[in-house]
Amino acid sequence: MQPEMTIPDKQPSPSYPAANMQQAHPRRLQVSWAVWILVIVGSLLLILVCLPLLVGLGGYVYYQMSGRIAPGVRVGATNLGWMTEDQAAVVVHKEWNMDGKLLVSDGLQSWTLTPAQLGLNVNALQTAQQAFLAARRQAMWDEFSQMARGWLDGWQVAPVASVDVNQARIMLETLNTQASKPPKDASLVWDGNKLVVIPGELGYTINISETLHNLETNPGIVLASGYLQLPLVPVIPPVADVSEAMAQAEQLINTPFRLTAYDPIRDEYLHWDITRDELGSWLKFDIGEDGPLAAIDEDKLGAYLSQLGESLGDDRWLDGAKYQSQLSQSIETKTDLFVLVSHHPTSYTVQPGDTLIRIGWKVGMPFWKILQANPVLDADALRAGDSLVVPSKDELLPFPVIPNKRIVISISEQRLWVYQDGQLLSDHVISTGIDRSPTQPGVFQVQTHELEAYASVWDLYMPNFLGVYEAWPGFMNGIHGLPTLSSGRRLWANILGKPASYGCIIMDLEAAEWLYGWAEQGVVVEIRQ
Image (cartoon, rainbow, N blue to C red; front, side, top):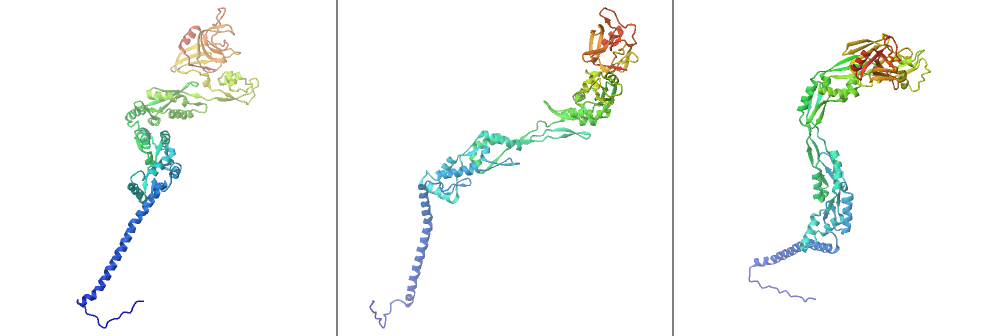
C-alpha cells in the first residue's frame, strides 16, 4: 500500500519559459512510437529474408540426406522432383519408351510414331541417375543455388538416348515410299491433230542419310522436342529435253503409208491409206541411252488392225497381235506395210447323201482335218442336218505365203496356170486324180521339194515332186513329172489332159522340171473343182 502523498498548496515556479514546458512531453511520445515501428518493420523484414532461406536450407538438408532427386528437375515435360532413382527410372521408361509419341514430318505430310518405330530408346536408369546428380557433387552454395533455381524455374535434364540405325533406316525407307514423289520426264503427246510438249516435273525424296545422322548425333534432343523433321531433296527428271524426239515424231507422222492386206485364199488384195492423224495417235515415247525416242505403240497399232478386220465379214479377220510388231518396225524403217488376211473356222450342215470325203471336196478341206475338228463325229454315221466344224483354211498354209506367185489348177479343165505378180507366166495341160482316188480341191502351198519321190503303194517314181497337201496324215499329194514304174516304164505320157493319177497332178517332164525350180516353199497352190 503506497503512502499518501501531500500536495503542497503552491509549487515553485521553474526557471525556464512556460512554452518549453508545455512541448516537452509530446516529443518524448513521438520518439517512442518510431522506434517501435522500426523494430516491427525490421523484424518482419528479417523474417521475410530468413524464412525462405531457412526453409530452403531445410529442404536442401532434407534433399541431401533423403537420396531423392531435387525438386523441379524435369526430363522434357516429365517432372522427377523428389523421386528416388528407381521411381524416376520407372516413370521415364513408361512416359518416354512406352507412351512416348514423336511427330515426324517432311513439311507436306506428317506421321505420329513411337520412338521404338524409329529405333529410338531412352536409357531410363542412366537418365534417372543424371536427374539425381543435378545439384550434387558441387560446392554447397552452388548445390543450394541450383536446387533453388530448379525449385523456382525448373531444371531440365537431357534424356540419355540411343538409336538403332538399322531400325531407323527401315522406318525411314517405309515412310519414303509414302512421302517421295518420282520425277516426271518431259514427254510428247498427240493432242487431236498436233504434237504437244509436256514439261518435266521435279520429284523429291527423303534425305535418309542426313536424317540418320541427325538421329545418331542428337537422339536425346529429338526425343525431348517430340518432333523429327525429314529433309527432302529434289530429284531431277532424267528427261528434260524432248526436241530430238519431236523431230523423230514429226518425221514418222509426216511420211505417208499404205497398208496392204493379202487374202491368199481368195487371191485378193486390200488397201488402206494410213492418215497422219492415225499415225500420230499411235505414237509413244521410250527412253533410250541417249534420251527420249519416238516410236509406234504396237498395242495401238494391233488394235487398229483388229478393227479393220471387223469390216471384212464374219469369216475373215486381221490378226493384230501377230503383225503389230512387224508393222511398227515397218513404219519406223519406212518400208511397205503388208499383212495376210486370216480366216475363221466355219460350219457345214450335213446334206442327205453326204460322205466325209464329199464334204471335204465341197468345202476345200481334206476329210481327215474335218474329222480332227469334230472328235465325237462318226464318219460312217453322218446324219442330215448335223452341223460340223470346218477348220480355218489357214491350217492348209503352214509356211509363210509368197504373195506374188500363185499356181492355179482346174480339175474340170485339166489345166495348170502359173502366175507371177498377177501376170500369167505359163499354161500347162495336166492330169489329176481318177474318180476312186480324186485330187482334193482347196487352197494349199508348196511344202516339200523332192527330185525323185517314190510312192511304195503304187511302185511309182515321181520326178521333180512338189508336195502340196496331205491326203491323209503322212501321205503327201503333189505336182510332179510323168512317173515311172520300178521297171523303168513311163506312165500316162499319152493321156495328159484326162484324169489319170492316184491324186497327184501330173505334168510333162520339161514343165515339171521348170516349175520345180520356180516354185519355192510357200507358193500358194489353188486347186479348183
